[in-house]
Image 1 (cartoon, rainbow, N blue to C red):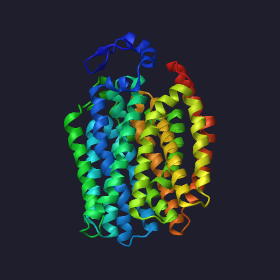
Image 2 (cartoon, rainbow, N blue to C red; image 1 turned 60 degrees about the vertical axis):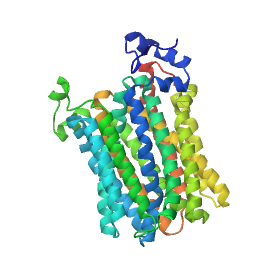
Image 3 (cartoon, rainbow, N blue to C red; image 1 turned 30 degrees about the horizontal axis):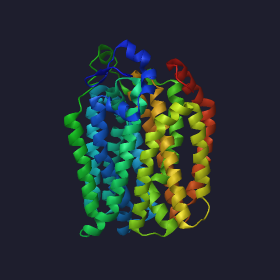
Length: 439
């Protein structure tokens, strides 16, 4: 057989570490998934409810705002303040995870996201929406600052981290697409409330709270309270922690993720509005496109490990960069709605593949002892970039120039490629050489 079968996953003896690569090549994707640790399977399975909740809210929230006479520019400001708050709390979130345990901070973040969603449903004024946005993004900050590290700690071995992350994002995107489809139809069934979208927002909040309950009760606590001696000795303040963990590699990688934050927030928070304004389609048609988008994102996430295995990390980056820059540039030009929709889907799938590669490879390049700090630092700088991107996107969409965001996206991607080529690629190559993997 190509693997040592033991209860709960692969055997952890040294021979497994040495021969893992050869054994993995003998296994199909489903066999690899089958023998993942139980905690990873639970983590991935419960991601479905997170995807549904965020998918519903992501589709209806902007329409809910517009129905309450909130302008696109005000929506952009809401997104900007949200990403700013997310960045503000990201560094403390990393240190809180180190001191109180990743799982506790992770679950707290999910609960705060659900609470923010609930206030979005209750509120009718911009003031309350700012409160909801702040609470939601504090929660998102806690979640994204601990999610990958917690998942990787359950994965136990670095060799299965990429597969675990790919599956997590694949499930999220698939069920986010299902949630988006639900978001297109629920308002037609639950028309009562301040707007016809209010019922959908409450359902999304319920789905998020369910994730918190399931993960809180089923997942074990790991890295909790810094139980090892080294962790106890390293309980220092924020300034001391910065001095201890900050190095040139982390600075380079977090600045790279700052650029990714700009690129992400130029389009993703506004994609339903961009599609509607560009094509003139009604809400249900937009939900179909975004549902198809979720399915494409699912397959894009699934193929990431295969792509890296076939082409190597560096060559994969070259191909994905070329595709993303080209498709974003094409979307800037005027075209018939059906052509826009198809190219939008292609661009979305390739961009998701790109983001998955960036998130997985940058985290894998950082030592385990520095991952909590890096998780907070990358969220901090990516959030600053996200705030800039959201504000710029809201500004241009408000002036009826929604496709300009794709032109800006292609330019920022080109800048990030130059940065990758000269600063990030050497880090990846060095890490790959340490692990003896292909480039």
